[in-house]
Amino acid sequence: MVTRRTLLASGLSAAALYAAKPDYTFAEIDRLIARGDVKGKLSKEDLPTPALIVDLDAFESNVKRMVAYVKGKGRAIRPHGKTHKCPEIARYLISQGAVGACAAKLSEAEAFAANGVKGLLVTTAVIGRHKIARAVAIAKRHSGIIYCVDNTQNAQDLNDAAGAAKLSLNVAIDLWVGRRTGILPGDPAVALGEAIAKLPNLKLHGIQAYAGHAAHVNGFANRKKVSIEAMSPAVETRRALEKKGIACPWLSGGSTGTYNIDTGIDGVTELQPGSFVFMDIDYNRIGGASGSEVYNDFQNSLFVLTTVVSKPKDDTAIVDGGLKAFSTDKPFPPQWRGGSELPYAFAGDEHGRLTMTAGKQVNVGDRLEFIVPHCDPSVNLHDRIFAVRGEQVEAVWPIAARGLGQ
Ligand SMILES: Cc1ncc(COP(=O)(O)O)c(C=O)c1O
Picture 1 (tube, rainbow, N blue to C red):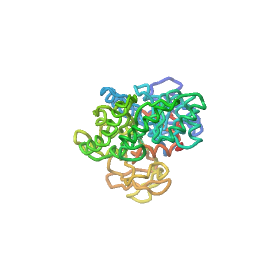
Picture 2: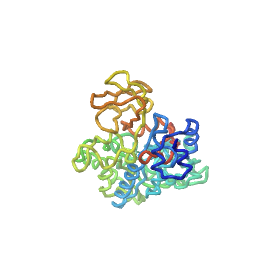
Picture 3: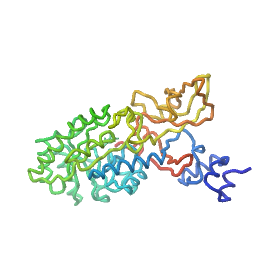
Picture 4: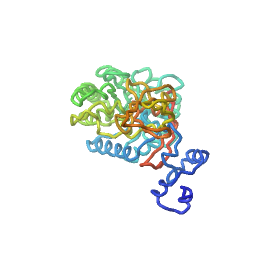
């Protein structure tokens, strides 16, 4: 019998290899996956399901498109690592022109730093004695890391800890631009900037202004209005600081939904989008600049691969991916990659229910891929991402910061 193993030994082409009948035992597959030794050896068919997969052609095209656009507008890009939590992806983005990676939390930054990711910006304030000690410990090994602050006491605490460790910390003023954290723009932020300027162990890098509420506004014109309204006070605050003689060369913000808006705002120097590497159903729905209903600037590259494990009725099939394989924070379920047939409904922790029509039937053992409702929390449910090109698995990327939310 011609198997993949005999073909492998004969050195025949990859196409012939993948057309051959798989003959690995599960133990062999498990070992190859654990070693990441998959290129030319495993196909999607071999993967135990549910499995998180990234389509490399779509992923690479998303990265190239975003980096080229942002750099073409004369801005830097430091993509947010909260989306992928994966050092391999952060390093790939840097190899393609990103200046570094954002980390949502200190523990995410620790995982990135330990895996060789340079140019880190921690986008959430570091509060409390223990976290400040950890922040200083990372900065000792990872010069240039930037921390966000939005109050003078925290700036003072960071300064004191940095002084005790005999180092200088880079900080950015986290500005409130309509949602979430930050100090109010204008006078309060300028006063914080003045206070930071007087602290000997802190260096003011600039301002972070993340307008998350603008990212998913439906329709490009509406989104543009919301983002410009949010970001204008940040630009003004940057100018006000410089008027006071406080250098503020950097203003970072933006998202996948507003990259082509914020790069047009004078004074925004850097973008920190995250989801564009993968995309998800939530982003697909926001509408594009051309007026298209679907936001297709970036392609869906992230999928959960599942297996049909049961067909209890003519119109019902059950797949092995449920609440533990997909995010559940959005009011819509996963979507079959193949189109609108086979609507999915959650059927518990481990299962999903597909409704079949006479025209569209699937069988037990079939493999089906689904677009996730929301990429960031979906990634956080998995240990690794299988990087695939066509049917072939090219790499296994550990999601090193999975579950690290501290
Ligand atoms: C501070 C910050 N910056 C940037 C982003 C990236 O946004 P998106 O994934 O929408 O591109 C996020 C996402 O939540 C964020 O929290």
